[in-house]
Image (cartoon, rainbow, N blue to C red; front, side, top):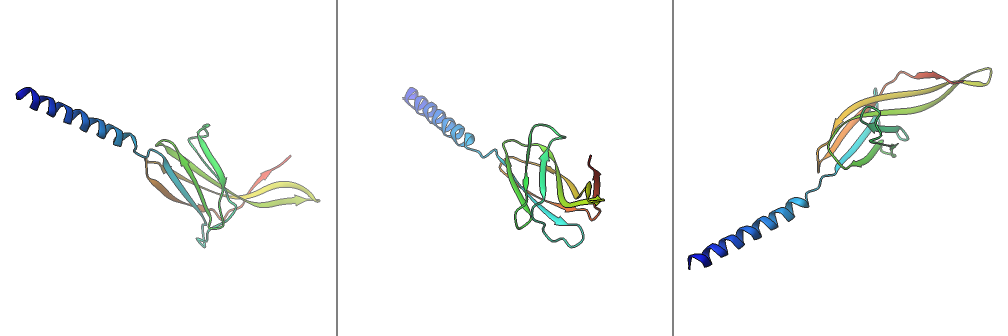
Length: 135
């Protein structure tokens, strides 16, 4: 009788651990990101802003453009701390009809991703226009 009870208890424990391990493996480990890019002064969303999310320039990154609502969405497979860089093209300055300066506005932020969570972050585009000399 004791052997039967011991065998039933052992089978129940093994079955319980098996079910627990299967359920634990189904856990969502993806990290979801939604970046909202807005004007620093008006806080209005800005469309067509180039957004790059990376770890100090590494090959682990995601990039793209904001939609009509000023939002860029992406998914990463693991937790990490990322830098967010946004750049909005404002055109060129020219002297004697030759394009000399690439003009843009920028904004930065940092995000921390957690498995199974969605991180919402806002990047404010600075009002200052940056001019890079082009050869």
